[in-house]
Length: 313
Image (tube, rainbow, N blue to C red; front, top):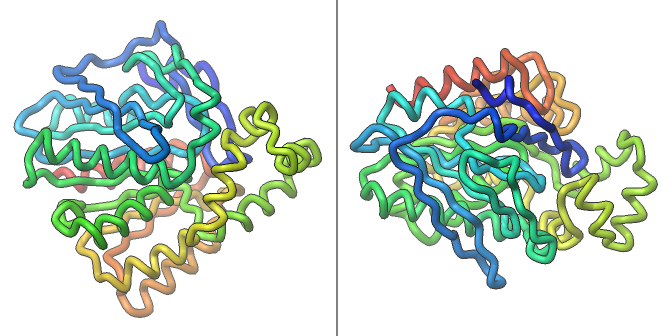
């Protein structure tokens, strides 16, 4: 039974920057020949629980799936990858944030450590993502092709991680064949936060929690801490990251899948990015639009699936 048929809960986080769906325990799901777990070390004595899953060997492509903000577990293979992993020489990699832990295949049994979660920032996400990429190359060899599949917060992590590798580890960066990105945040983080606070129903309560760094409210309504927000505000915007990457002439292909009715990360900056790139062919980019919002739609999932199939031909 698919994840969508087994929906237990959908939790909005970062004022709707992402929405992650949890498997109900009884739903089960496909079993895989190889499921390996490993801690991915980050700064400040934090680590992410990493997961690497595959069926067919030898593995040729590894997709690192970097989900959006929130407090739920990613300890499962997303439905959009189930058939690909089962029938192709593809491995699926992902990780949980520090302080989040669940048995693989049963993300509804998640355990959270608030003391660790409150420390998590985008910087830790970048370190965990690059740790997962290093692990994939160790597991499958340097010839394996790497793909970054990021949604919402995961888009920013993917962009920051790719730039860090281009600067410090060109051999690993050259293994990255593509970035498939959806729910793309392009404006500065502070602007996105301010825009979304305008339509949040209990915005006054959230603003008060932001002022006092009330984790109880922030964890429920935003899924992130003050430490996360402060770090994110200091970082380059998504649009700036594309411009910085273009200056390096990277070899990876970029596939943008975006909803035309996305209130959380509006489509207008994405169309502006497309026009900017088309003006001088700065990056190898394809843009795919679907009718729907930040959480996706049947059309959006179908479009993303077509992109994924294209990459593993």
